[in-house]
Amino acid sequence: MDKINRTKVEKPDCLTDNDKKWTLDWKTRIKEGKKFTWHNYKTMDCQKTISKALSQITNSHCSYCGIYKLERGRITPTIDHFKPKSIYPDLSFEWSNLFISCNECQKYKGSFFPNNKEQNFRGNFYPKNIEPLKPDDKDYFFDYWFQIDWRSNKILPNEIRTKDEQKKALITINFFCLNEDGRPEAREEELLKYTKTQDINIFSYVFFLERG
Ligand SMILES: [Zn+2]
Image (cartoon, rainbow, N blue to C red; front, side):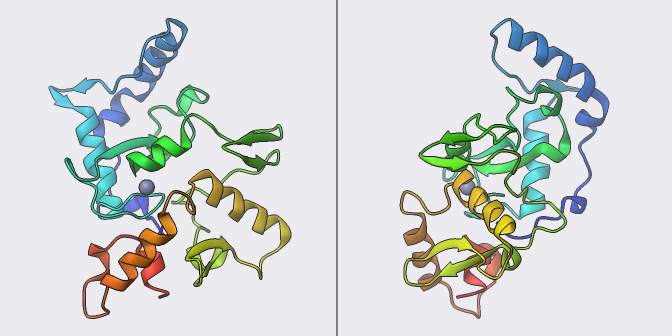
């Protein structure tokens, strides 16, 4: 959940060359009830290429919760569609819609996305027409949108922002389930392990540690 700069890494060629073709293929597969596939490109596994590039952008942290280190066998990295590919097939191979994520965040998000109707999902209310913050948005700064309750280690909307901004922050917290299933405790544990002489980037929840 730290500031993500997508321009750090070039969009992989496989997307530049094939995004339109693969998007059409996915739309057909949806109609046929088939599963999504990442395809190969010039004998390369496109999934691996994209996953590697996205991991470089975040230094192997989850783009959403900040857990580290995403790697095979431990916390498996997965390519997540910020806007779900089932609802927004046109964004299925769109570079700016792809993020490296931990399994947990992807599972939490599922194929839900707030839209132009009021909705309830996972016990949370989503008003219409307010989208969660996208981690690579240019105005996405953790400090701007959020604050931390140090007693509970929960992430909360920044109370000095406008009502609408606080709504957006709250939707983002709920969308990524940042305060659920032991996540505040996991952040506190990481904070206790971290000492300021160490490289902060090899820890989880960098945004949280910076303020601790
Ligand atoms: Zn995550």
